[in-house]
Length: 172
Image (cartoon, rainbow, N blue to C red; front, side):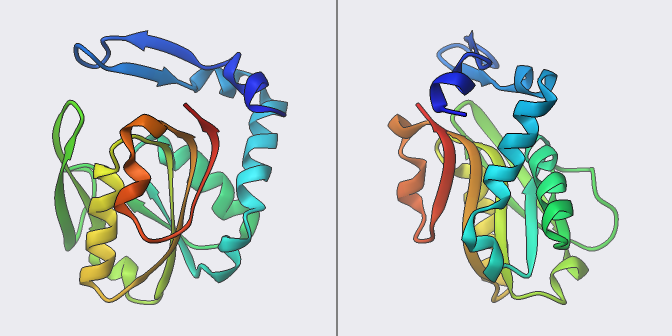
C-alpha cells in the first residue's frame, strides 16, 4: 500500500467545516476492509508502541484507530473526549483549532496506573488538540512516547510543536 493508493480514497471537501479549510475525508478507506486492516497493521507495527504502557485516542476519529491498535497490541486504551462526554472527575484542557476553539478531557483516574503513553489521532494539522492532551499528561508527570496518525498536513507545521517522535502514514 503506497501513499498514492491511499490518496485515491481520500476526498477533499473545500470550505468544510468553515471557509478556507480543506477537509481531508479518509472515511472512504473504511469501505475497504482489507485496506483498513493494512493501515491498522502498519500503524500497530511502529516500534514506539513497545515502550507505551497505554494508548490515548483523541475524540472522535482517533477512537477508530486507537481501539483497533489497542486491541492488536493488548494495550489499555484511554479516551480523550470533547466536553460533556465523560463522567467522573475529569482533567480538562482547552485548545484552539484552525477554525475555532474547543476542549478535551480525560478521566483523572484513568491516568493513575500508567506513566508512558502513545497518543493516536487521525490527522495532525496545527497540533492544537494533541497539544492539549500533551499538557494534561505533562501536568500529571506522565511521559509521551510518541504520536501516531494517519494523515499529516505538513504545511501547517503541527509537528514543530512537539519534541517526541511522530509517525504518519500519509503526508500532504
